[in-house]
Length: 209
Length: 100
Image 1 (cartoon, chains in turn blue, red):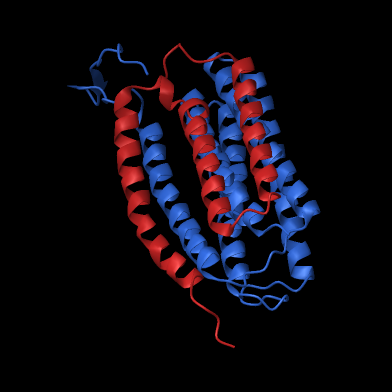
Image 2: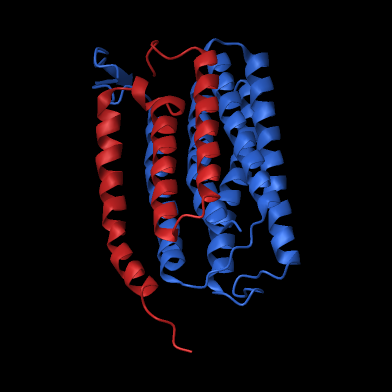
């Protein structure tokens, strides 16, 4: 960690004020606050799922090996998108606009692929008869409720992230946004990836046949 | 702003590959047919390791001022620790017998 950066005073509206103790702007701090609160939301969902999963003797294991392979591919796609957003942030910080836009575009593409793979898995389960409150194998009906709510919340974050990245890319290309916007959007995208690192083992692997 | 001590892009690719290796270990563990409780805590431990690496390196907390780390981690871990109060009841339910 960097401990040697001095606290530099900054001028806000003509008034000299002490700089942020965090050493970065309020957008990024706001994103961190959001991430912490959102992490607690996901944690509450996952703990509730864990409670039911451990405490229910007949739960049901709907995921065959093909679904697990699909999950591994989804993980690889999302991890790759974390690397492409890192490349976009790096490019924007060096002023390479075209390169930053290219990496942002690739991140959006990977996010879209992830969402498509996710929906494919959903439709497969629905086709097998799984519903929010119905288990076609006769086990605990809570599986559908926990699976669709947790993965649905995550999918919403991915789709929202892709839309946000599209706005950021457009604004960045038009000169309305700068590298700090790209960096803040990148922080959000990494968080989406981070959540999946918990969702995949807990929702998919714990329910593998 | 982050400091200039950040890793090269190739190092981040290495971190990404390392995270995929952990995912591979998780999948292998899944097919060892461990008891539910053991599998849950094994997967949670590995996922926590992945999450820590992602936060420190991909989200750059390692390269920010320490105050960010100390603002975020203790409070978040405290909330997660409080949520753990549910486990004893989950284990109690798991050991209850089914009535036919």
